[in-house]
Length: 293
Picture 1 (cartoon, one colour):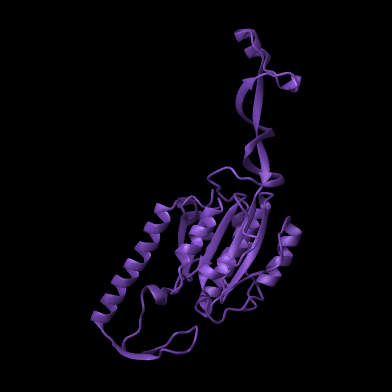
Picture 2 (picture 1 turned 45 degrees about the vertical axis):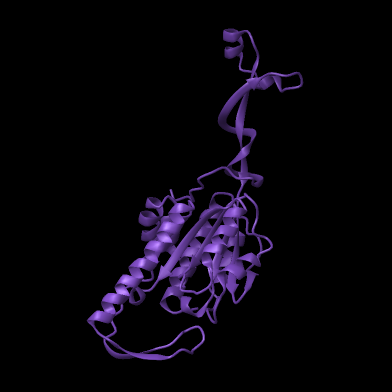
């Protein structure tokens, strides 16, 4: 990775006013700031139920007792710590100019997790494997240590997203959010990976990182192309107006298919260009897609 920091002052300043948006309660662990499906002792009121012997008398609503001649107990939402997972596609196609954007996005999501008293873990996807970067991270001090490890991440080879995600034995069940950061330029079944995470009761979001050249290529004339992940399948072709038009249509179909899938499965989705500033992306697209608030 380049010497440029992935979490600089400008990004940190922007993150101070943001929070991850979790759409539904979680089955978290320990004390935290996320709403749980359980009832507990947070300040947020949930509902009432009738008093039964053994209940805490301090929770009786005496106003209701006077109105209905019955005792009712106030119940409050419990607050739990979410356990978030950030899956990072480590394949060669994610290298180059996209690497910095992907790592900055991963760092931003991690910071917002620990700032909300959640824990976060980074999973590096390569081949058919899922490698844990540094365990569950709680608190800003441990998080900044993890950022140093993120800055050393290299991108090479290929990845089978489905098999790699399935290889994660610590994906969690209903206890937080899972973020998949990838260009999705793969023949592997990434949709199956997303379905697996959804099946675990996770809130899931896909962060797609693409370079401007992948969206709007500037190549002209006779060009040589090869698969960057294996160095094979080299092809020479004439890039003319017709080829560029066909490519634009293919890109549009590719992106629309992703959007439709995510919308149909209630999966968050955000397309990030590698020439965009991550802090601006979070403030605009992140809020618009309800991944950030």
